[in-house]
Image (cartoon, rainbow over all chains, first blue to last red; front, side, top):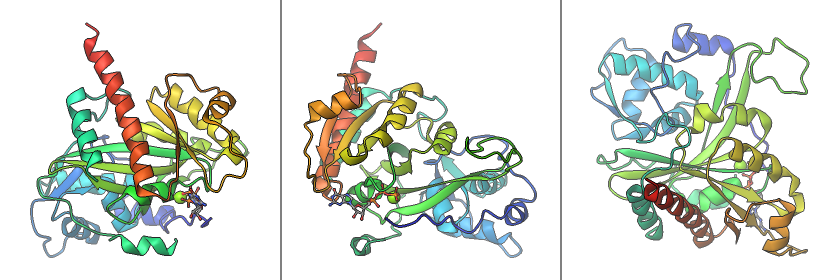
Length: 120
Length: 203
Ligand SMILES: Nc1nc2c(ncn2[C@@H]2O[C@H](COP(=O)(O)OP(=O)(O)OP(=O)(O)O)[C@@H](O)[C@H]2O)c(=O)[nH]1
Ligand SMILES: [Mg+2]
């Protein structure tokens, strides 16, 4: 069994710096599987984390993949994505069922999932 | 990480047409085979990430008497399956310990469903996960990772030991085998499909 080693960002000072002092996203608009797409190239003087997100998301990339790639906690990534979204530098493709805690999706989508799984 | 991981790419861009992300969560005790199961069906090497809670006084372990603890970390890994041009399924492997459930809504609201992975040698680890999933009203199936089982309990015995209701699917699996992992996922989605049909029939 591999011992679990947390990625090295638990340091509150580090989180503070990356997010400009915020510890929570203003809203929960980014689900773990919201797909993020860059809408522009990084520009000079941009915060380095923003640059990395724009580079990572040239193709659709889930929030959780961005977090893993950047080795940052989900919360921090959500804040950074919120900034970029507000500036129009990314777009977000949200999952259908986001927000509704326990709703079962419609059977048509599930059929699609089954079909996809049978083909892997 | 084992050497088997090297066969899968760690990065592989999704199709530009991808628009819908879906979630399935694999929960279970330590070392039960969660990462192995995720890896066996994933198109990318499982990646690791974490969530932190920074509020004071929340998410403090029950055993801790330090009320001012401000950071709680939950780590989990995930893999990915592109189901078609538009739909991509993310599979999360998460430990079922207490602080994890505290973050459930934040991380896994809207999840399709869950797989509870069980090791018959440590069945107690599964109780808590089953209880929490019922509490969160998340549909789930239970998969028994057989390892090289010296004392093969029957599925009926396991169902009894877990006090698992009849309507919850219970199956055997070998987390290392892709076709077996695939069967587990199909069992879950079949179950969801039946639930969705029943719901759609109800006026
Ligand atoms: N013989 C056998 N070994 C297995 C099986 N599934 C997993 N293993 C091994 O058991 C060990 C633990 O598996 P993991 O997939 O890392 O378990 P996990 O649940 O992700 O573990 P943690 O994340 O540490 O809680 C690894 O060495 C696997 O290779 C199985 O079906 N049979
Ligand atoms: Mg693991």
